[in-house]
Length: 164
Image (cartoon, rainbow, N blue to C red; front, side, top):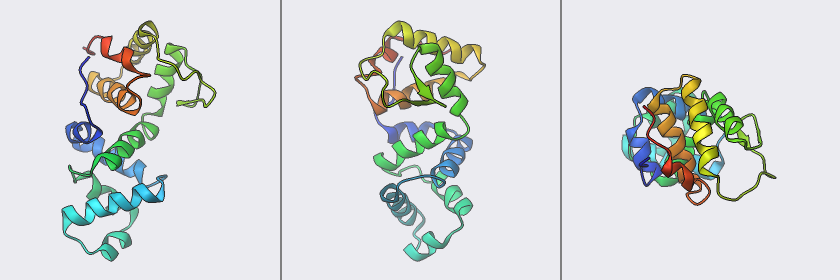
């Protein structure tokens, strides 16, 4: 499987609906430093005054941020994680269960073995996602997001065939 090499490139590839969902989840629970970077990207792209951008209701901030394609690498990475921790959390649990990785509602447990994931485990996880009816594009986006977070741990995903 071929992955986008950066979160920013993967963000640009998402559909408008996916970017909207990611941005909506992003504003709900994001560290202050990343929120500041997101507001800076929004201010730059929309040519807004900082106080106007900060005063927007969260729904407006989300819609505006979703329309910005060049948000920067740290913000893009946080947006991709937010996408999956929002509406797609069950997808994470399905994958991790099938791969045999301990998790808490889709989040890897801190005490989970931090070594590289075996290709067979990765294949089982991908097969479970396909069986659960997730679209090939959703599966690709999720796997690419995992790989971007820790390429060494998720290297086995590179050997998994493209979702059909």
